[in-house]
Structures are given as C-alpha cells and as structure tokens.
Image (cartoon, rainbow, N blue to C red):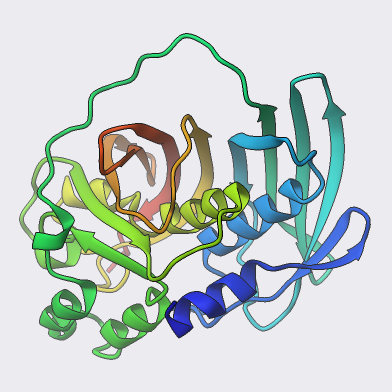
Amino acid sequence: MSEALERLLDLLDLERVEENIFRGRSRSAIVPRVFGGQVAAQALVAAGRTAPEDRTAHSLHSYFLRMGDPGAPIVYTVDRIRDGRSFTTRRVVAVQHGQPIFHLSASFQTYEEGLEHQAPMPYAPDPDTLPAAEEVLPRYADRFVDPSVADRMLKARAAVDLRYVDEPPYGSVGQPREPRSQVWFRANGKLADDPLLHVCLATYVSDMTLLDSVLLAHGRGGWAVGDVVGASLDHAMWFHRPFRADEWLLYDQESPSASGGRGLGQARIYTQDGRLAISVIQEGVVRVPRG
C-alpha cells in the first residue's frame, strides 16, 4: 500500500466523540478549501458507523453549503432518522467554526434478491494501456495559472491511480468537443474487505472529475487554467452492485446541460468486467471570470 493511500485511509478513520458525533481532519488541498470528495466520504463514514452491520450503503444525497477550512477539524453530527426492517436512513451535518458546511442523507439496506438489469458498459481501452497521471500532468504544467499546480495535483491524487481515456480539459483548451469524459481509477494499494470503506473511497474519487464533461463542451480548461471558476453544489450517488475500489473502475461521465452559471454532470461507474456498480449526478458552479 502506498504512503499516500495510508494517509487517506487515516483521514477517513474518524474520531468518535460521542455516540452520534464524529470528528475528522483535512488534508492539504490543491486549492485553499476542503476537497468536496473528502467531506462527502467522511460524512458517509460517520453515517455508516451508526448503521446496523448487515446493511450497506445504497444511496446518498448531499449539498455543499460553505467552503471548508482545511486548517480546522470538521465535526459530523449524525441524526438516526429511521431503522426499518430492510432500510436504515441517516442524516449527517458537517460543521466548522459553528456553521454547517455540508449536509448528507444516506440510506442503507440489507441484502435481498430482486429483478436484475443494467445499462451496458460502453467501450473503453484497457486501463493498463493508458498513461498514469505522473506521465500526463507534467505535459500541461506550462498551461496552468501556476506551474506548481501540476505537482500539487499529483500529490493530492497520489492515493488513487486515475487515468484519462482521452485528453483532460486542460489538454484541449479552445477545442470544444463532445461533452463526455472517461477515466479509469482504483486505489493505489490493497484495501481491507470492509464494504463501507470501498463505497467511501469511491465517493471520495467521484468528486475529482465529474464536471470535466461540462468544460469539454466549451473548450475550457478549468480552474487550473484560470478560464472558469467552479465549485460543487450538490452530489448524489446510487450504489447498485458490490465492487472493490482497489480494482479498476470505469468512470463514464457526460454533461446534459449547462446554464445559469451552473453545469450538470452525470455518470456511471462500471467494474472492469462490465457490471454497473454506481450511478452519480452532480451540479456545480461553472462561471467564466469577468475580464
């Protein structure tokens, strides 16, 4: 297991302050605010630790309310909304400096048999044939508003092996194309068998690239290039089938709409053998800076 992954797992191992209260720390971010995927994953950890052990997460719905301060702890308060015969519902509020910065509702379910069908997995090249981030990012360092961004991105994402199928947004500035993006990802090391851990790690990664397709439609490179200002507004996920976050997962993303200073991204995450594991939808602020 890489040191970066060990640090990330330590970040997700929240301190239990009271029965329904947890405290988390933050890691150094690329920008001076808490990474949205981190607070979402930590909130899901808090919810999951109050759910019965025989129930796994099947959905989450969340809102990003304020920018998080990476230098301060985050307190997660869990409200045990309901424990039914098959489903458990939890609500989590993340607080810093006396104010809520994030709100999450999550649902957990006992395993049961049912009807089965899924959307087919789209074509994507084998991830082992694609270049790793440490090969790709340095190529674009001279396009970033700050050349050190490439190094900071590598450090921030070192816990995850993330590989773009096509050029990332900052590699095709000024060249609008189909609003679709594909990346393969997996944890940079072997994980324990705890299903909650794999779900939380996928939640963490899901906020890294989901709005890329919005940028691609307009030939924009993103915040690192300085041609847009962006932030996540809300985030929803549905966990359909078991998966391992330390095995290759295909993140197939597209944007059906952008308007009013907001962009919508939707995606499906497949296991390498073609099973639909997760569906994701996110809306974010995507503003063009006024010159």
